[in-house]
Image: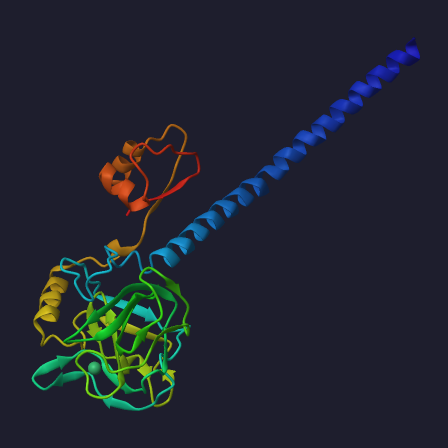
Length: 299
Ligand SMILES: [Zn+2]
């Protein structure tokens, strides 16, 4: 009996010791667990940001996504300076021959570079991106394509004989998008290539060196009062709008992580935006149910 009693006490003590060391262990492990959770959280956030970037390239810069207008960004905010990352580029054509430069030409503004290509030559996307426009313009670009890229640029490819992509298609740098041609306002087959930032045409020769088949530098810094053509009415209009825009910090995206008890309207309030803006931004309905930890865009 005494033996049994001692045994029981021993077992209980052993249990207490092990429980004690177990709980200590738990406390000791708590910090790494929290750390791990945070890593998982930021991984989920990074994944979401990445997926959003693929679906809506340069979302923080462009207010809208439409398949209609090449450079219609009427009330857009233009940052004072913005560094465009050119790494991961692909020359749109292996051709090295520039047949017409960017700048005033025949009393009009030529917003791109003309590069000699033959009818049927493969034209590829200059960067990863999403096809915004695939259209035909009889008196202008002919068959043309506009692609928006995560680096903030939009590239335009004109006078194509054939378009090989569809609107809203995700493309990779170097992926064939069309064939060279001479459609639209064109004399002789060539590629009309434009690089635009928020609708403002940048001389592609500042970014791409066609004779050398390379980029000029790894990055290009756009300055809103910089060497961009302002001779044209639409560009001048955008230039004026740019001057009215004072804060470039507002471009960073803000995210909100859903907590227990949150409602969509409470989150909208916290973010200082309307409920409908919040829903539109996140492509959810006003009645969508939330789950704790869900990440919402709020700017
Ligand atoms: Zn041209």
